Length: 423
Image 1 (tube, rainbow, N blue to C red):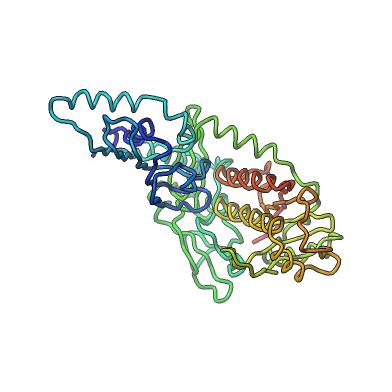
Image 2: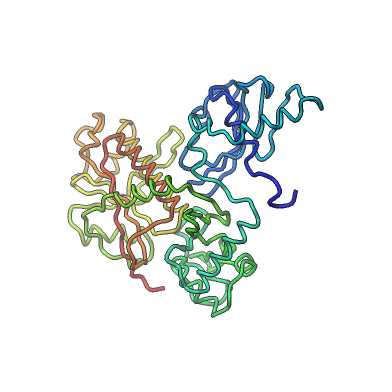
């Protein structure tokens, strides 16, 4: 159908207002925490949203199927844009039924059980998408990039990367990281439009042979946050999303209120993160490098890196060069996995103790440590000279990581590490 002539999420809204919240059967969702992942989940018997493992702060629900609590809609109902029902309706009562559908669409009853579903919505109107793209282009062409980042859209192995090139893979300066200002400079004054952004590529160059490892369209690498009409819109992996105002405020406030670690980290001017982590103990006392000391452990975790740096004062430090939403989400997740295993799994602690230097070993690895005696610090290496900031979905990931770690008793703080490396 022609764009703009149908009501988006009509079927979903009707279903949310009619479905029995304890009798759900299937959900289509997109997880936005790092690289967006689309999935359909079904369960063998009726259940609640928690049975689907939904993260209400990072999952975008597209479609829902469940048991109707109103017999007028039949037994099982499904909704996305369209509404699918098997109800007793014919030409004699179709008007009444359609009127009932409109009433249920306009109802706010769903907010009782599904109020979180409005926190994030995807923009599928080509008209609205074009409008947001034009706002993005205006900012890029004017050099107004305060809320525009550039980062690879995948989780990558930084150890094997020599650098990145914009537009041409065989010419131009090799860049240590993606940076929107560098990209604008590489465009050599050309006025950018969407076709240009989608057709020009960003190249990842191998450290081993200077060959191309990966490439992405420039548009896929751009992350932007735009405010318009009191609403916040996020560009992430080439898709636009609308974030409800109250949710935006909650996430921003939590990030602003996250404590900054009172530690002095040396500036980053190294070949890679591993070289940096090795160098820190040579400059800072009572700290050891644990980078690349992976621990083989079961339970689906396989090889686990406890941390990058560990202090004698029980500070567990994870460090990552800023690489956009996906890289930071991966960083925060690593902190949660190691923190949970350290607190709850004696087998993991025994293996960890084998890797720790003598003066850092646990007195008795079989005894559960008190997480309240430890703190987890996320160190983020950044080139920005402005007040420290990260993309919205990274803030959401940090918020979730803090909740889980603080639930064990850890103190969680962040630290900006200045990147002074010249490409």
